[in-house]
Amino acid sequence: MSLWVSALVLIGAAMAQTDPRLSALHATLVDLRAQTKLSNDNRGDSPELTIAKHQLRAWIESQLGSIAKEGDEQEVSQRMNEELRKVSLELADDNENGLGSLGPTTLKWDSELLILTTRVGILCGQDASAYAYRKVDGKWRRIWDSEQYDYGHDQPQRLAAVHVLQSHEGGNKIGPVYIMTLGNKSGCSSAWHPVYYRIWRVDSVGPKLLLERSEMAWRRTETFLVGSIAQGTDGVVDALIEFTEKSVDNGVHNREAIRHFKIEGDRVKRVGPVALSPRDFVDEWLTRPWSESANWSYSASLRASHQRIHSDYVAGYFISPTMHCETPDLWQVDFENIDEKQPQDSNANVYFLIRWTPPYRFTMMNVSNKTWPKCNQPDEEADAWRTLFSTQDWRN
Image 1 (spheres, helix red, strand yellow):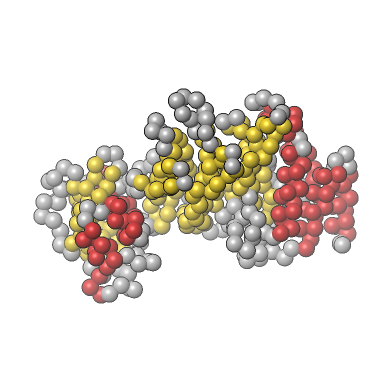
Image 2 (cartoon, helix red, strand yellow):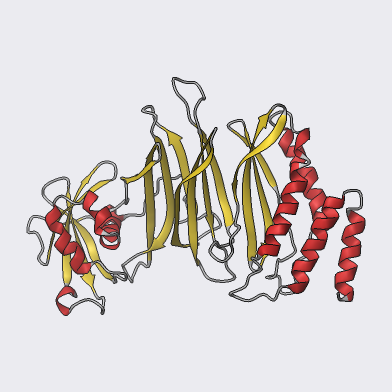
């Protein structure tokens, strides 16, 4: 053990001498910083990191007894973070190696649950974990967690949000709890990162993961993945997620992605809206498998047109502007396909006829290599940027 590591151990032990659990946590953090060689492939996410996360969690759980009512968690969270700062390591000289450091721990009261979020440093970011606690017989009991265990398959993540829905019936809060997490894999420099969104149902049997997806997204701001979860009057759970993903248009490069789901029991079904503009709808229709695009198509005969263009990589340009047709609910989108992987006869302008009914219900009506004569009214506002969340103001 080097002299600087020995010094860190002694300092941390002295700071946390009143609590051996904090001393043990500090020693683990020091070992992680000393023994791990970081690289793009090894960011510090390892079984040893899990040990540190569990030591951190165990110490925090020993502090939760002083939370008796809503509001108490704020003072407890502040006090815990003050103690944890004493055992956390500073960032390395390059300010990218956060291994051995601890990020802020947060507590929030939501639907009679206590939600804990912890953050442990890795290379170019932090690995976040979330836990939910319910008071049983006067004690806080952990009923749910979102934590990375298998680092051969899982990826460390930054948690953007944890949303809780207490289901109800007849105005009474009964039934299971639904928890949605939104997160992304952090990186050192790239603006493109995988985003994760997951939904659990938590009842007397335990937590059940209902939805788990990962997609590539553009990190435009610190808040670039948003969502909500609610229950309708019919009892069906409604989940909505929005982020920015790559567009097939090489001139625009990105577009707003909408993921809307209805949850009934164990059944999760994607429903509309799937896009917020005619072009984005064409983009979505082309890039999703036919099993999904068929749900937004007027006729099964459109499958041949979909398969002719659809591939792992669709590229081209939307020709401006989108045209409004004489029939009020129809629009025409012109797409120049330039995918070199496609047959030569596919690389030509393709015209999509779309029905758009308020607010954002789109149907693919037809696909042709010729324009429709009654679709000749330029409509530049049709493809204006839109969002379903008021917090998405980055383009304004």
